[in-house]
Image: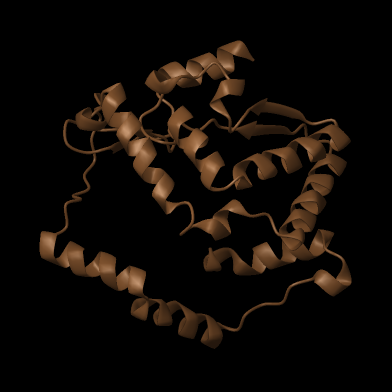
Length: 209
């Protein structure tokens, strides 16, 4: 995203209060931060095992919407998964969803909306609304087993949805969906994994609404 840093900061500063406005990080500081990531444990771990296994991803152009061995990225930016993923059984998907819960505490930072982020988000929404743009918030549901166990481990998703719905009510913004699958028509068979809907789930959500 650094390639759009100047536009990003300029846009932020159009709706932030003076004391909250952000400045540009000079290119030398950015280069230092970028290359220091090469020493991070996560990058080393991933790179080391990729080096041992070899690069499994070979990219090529195709006019086919599906592939047996790899995902296909369509011209609209969406993905069609390979056959192995598309044909996962409910039991396999349930196991994936349960295992994914173990990463919640590791990724705790992604399940939190800080006061600063909330202010930025609300200010951004206000700017869009002032331009006369109609906004719809979309909350995609999580797999039932993932949501159930994640709610026991951490209720951050519930809090985030609560904050989003409060803001939507204040601004009269429509909310589509819910992180909680019980609030949607989606069931276990409508997921590829802990968070990605099959076509059947997408149809249910948008057909219902």
